[in-house]
Length: 231
Image (cartoon, rainbow, N blue to C red; front, side):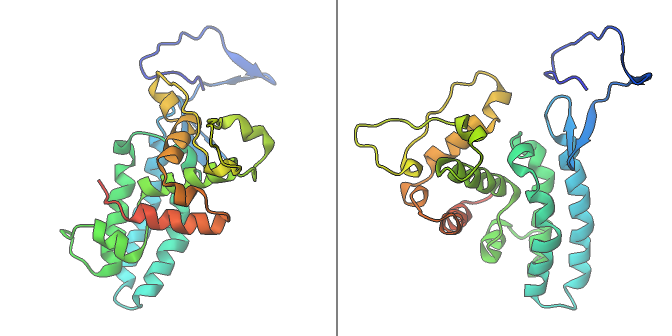
């Protein structure tokens, strides 16, 4: 696989051979359960997730007449949401239009759990069930990563992902500080965690950034994200 921009043309000369076997060029490859395409659009992985979600949403529709709502919620969080969360810090950093298919499937799941009609506005349903849509789950996961990064609880090899802005009245707590937002000219650069994570972090209210424990931070963060409507 050759990674390149969508408008970039790369000419390949010769072949790659390992142990007398020619290695064919592919546009998509699976790595630790994530489908990586040569343009880093993540469209193949997103479509794969959505296909899996759709099947399980159908199960929710069939079961909802026989089990209480809390069981449907449990099924959603055990059999649908983990597929969305896996690696979302990476593949969720893409165009919202690419994520729209998963969002639509989540809306169907919310309507199935609440016995709502297909025309029911989904935002109140997400808030009622206290479930984050795929766009907010991406923000939630990236911001959790940033919290761990700022509080020194992840491997030191990742510590250079961001830089703390030094202020005259800077607090002692590293997690309370604003982060330096790097300049990125390309779209791919703006989708990176070093850019997008800093952007999310700096826009987060200080009262949430300064939480002393990870569990408290995640709880306040989830409540904060639930306040905004789905676009």
